[in-house]
Length: 113
Image (cartoon, rainbow, N blue to C red; front, side, top):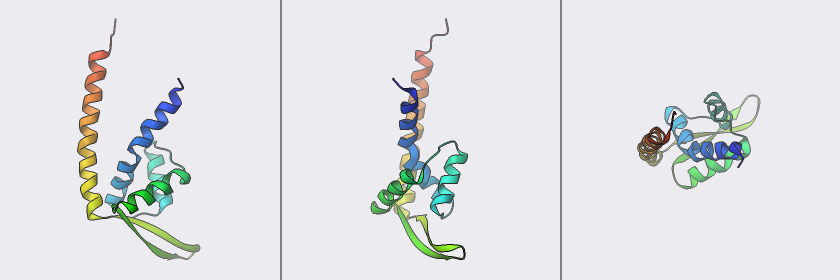
């Protein structure tokens, strides 16, 4: 078993919630989202982020607009929708319950002998 693969899968499982949370604070350009995820030690490549952004947009959780850039082509900025905010609250509640359950399981299964 490669532990690295397990760790990557755990991180991927929470990326959508993290993206919604980042965009709940303010609208952002994809490279800004990647930077915030990297700061949180959730390293994400553009090839991972863009499909997630598209899926969240298709579900009505995000929207975007184009803004002209002085340093190149127009940039696509993403923001969270009201439905996205509602979904984020549900995801956060579920996440907290999940973490609590995992932590409880870890406490009861650790043998310090």
